[in-house]
Image 1: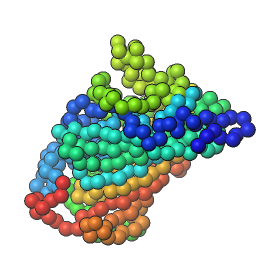
Image 2 (image 1 turned 135 degrees about the vertical axis):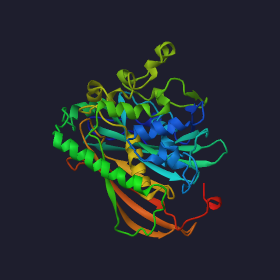
Image 3 (image 1 turned 60 degrees about the vertical axis):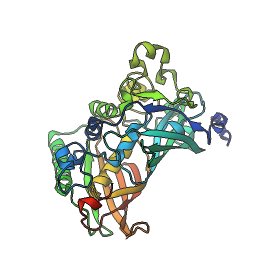
Image 4 (image 1 turned 90 degrees about the horizontal axis):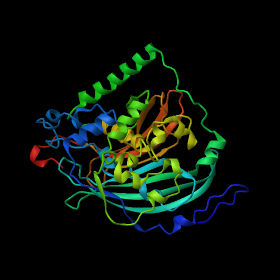
Length: 401
């Protein structure tokens, strides 16, 4: 794969080629997962499902696991780069990145307190195309596999990174709304009412099994937001890698920190040895545009914006909350079209499009299609998932997991 044949602007992708198929390094968590890591994750993702923060619900007589267990979305927060690092390899000067999507395969084991999760990483492939947003744009995919201390494969994430020339994005100004939308008090009260209705349904399901699912069933709508710098910061702090020295390098090669970032969006490791704030990412480094408008505009976005990894978690939590704790998401694939912005409301709507038998277990397998949009009906993300549903009550001694 080489440079694009654009008449004016090109992107040399040859530095990326040498990284394809190479086992990649990164950080590995120093400490096992703690119960408060799971609670902080549920709080950061605004997922008020008591199964993931209230041990009395998780340990109830009718529970599946008998203990606090992380939602399936939690895997991504055990990584030090949202699972995106393997898709950001090779030096392309002047570039930044946005999340383009995630595909997940879940193999069965859940993450529990006391688990120590390790990851392996590899760049899978890439393609170069022209976009209205930034001209020559690379869509690269990288794989991260998550394994627990028993050698059990928990899941695999195939993350898509959109790498683009920041200067070109600034010139084109595809996103031009620099001010947050205005909400009336009545509108905000209605949003809160609808949020309460959604989580009342989630709480009512509790530890029950999701039975008799039929094609055409609509998932209840979930609302998140309106987003603020405070809410984006709370999301960021739910990721353990944002805490100083929670990860240690595993010694394998990676060009993540030498990927061609703008100077303003780079980490300063010399200063970070003295003050880890300079390695934080949010105050300094590639994520500062999420909460600082001037840096969002530096990379071609109008105002502070949300995290692609959080968008993926919102979707997985949305499906998981509907399906219940006795169900298992086994595969999902979603593309992200545009980030959530400050002031915007995010709405998730889903539908069961098919129910068939899982050939591995004989259980029902539901196919779910989900659309994520904002208050103006602009689509933020689309995709689908396969969910293995339960069939009947089982005695505790026979429960899976």
